[in-house]
Amino acid sequence: MGFAETFKALSDPIRREILMMLRDGSMSAGEIGSHFGMTGATISYHLKILKKAELIFEKKEKNYIYYTLNTSVVEEIMMLKKNKKFFIASCIVILLPMFAGFLLWDQLPAQVATHFGRNGEADRYSSKLFAVAGIYLFLLAVHILCSVITEFDPKKRNVGSKIYHLILCICPVVSLWCGVMIYGNALGYKDVINLNLWTNVLLGIVLIVVGNYLPKCRQNYMIGIKLPWTLDNEENWDYTHRMAGKWWIIGGVLTILLGFQKFVDPIGATVGIILIVTLIPAIASYIYYKKHRVM
Image 1 (cartoon, rainbow, N blue to C red):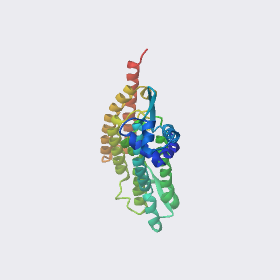
Image 2 (image 1 turned 90 degrees about the vertical axis):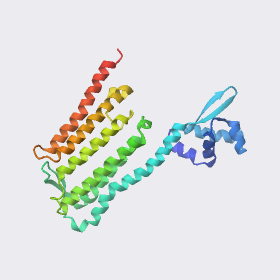
Image 3 (image 1 turned 180 degrees about the horizontal axis):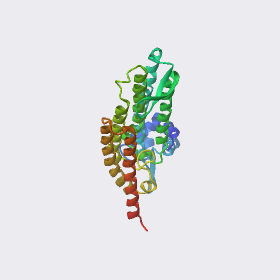
Image 4 (image 1 turned 60 degrees about the horizontal axis):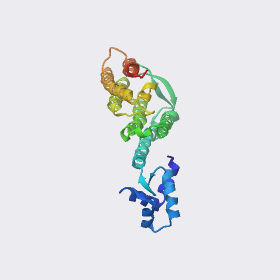
């Protein structure tokens, strides 16, 4: 199903009314034509367009052909309409720090710290224009790319609305975090903003939220532990993601707690935690694959 064919099919009020009629059950071309008082050729033309868009499918019974509404595609279109609003809102959120930066333009130094070391000290500076606009335009481009990739996922019907919204929340959250950290440091609020603490808190929350969704995530190519054996076998995928969900939640809690201690490098330890909670389910999924594969 292509978007061009779908929108073309839905652009005509007669075809939209045909879809409304088919919500009550299958109908033959003659029954549909009698409702509109049109010739058989005209009705066949509209039905052909609807079939090409995969909005309906036909079934032959004796000497008659009956047309049935493809409910899965219609639900997908409704979800796309709902997701469009969420996508636009998320793009606006990504650009909010850029708008704030232009309002604060005269208060910002010519060179703005945009990278910080493990100790929280600035170790790389960028031009004011890049700090105010470049970072957030780049995040917007990544955001759009993630949305496009999701739309072209061969298994996109397995990506539910909640998972899709979760994907669309990543760049807006990163954008707001960058804005607070970069502008806060540039405007002299370094002592108020503890970079290591809030970085760990943010990463921990992300791990917990993603961990909560992983067990509900069905096979797709966009989000999850995408290994050859998990993509090949749905039972392996479900087993792996149920396990991963628990480990990611545990990792998220540990990551948040690391931000409040001063004995070990919180960022370095967090990287280790992320590797562990990712590798354990991946290794377990391979063991599951070896144990259950058909010889």
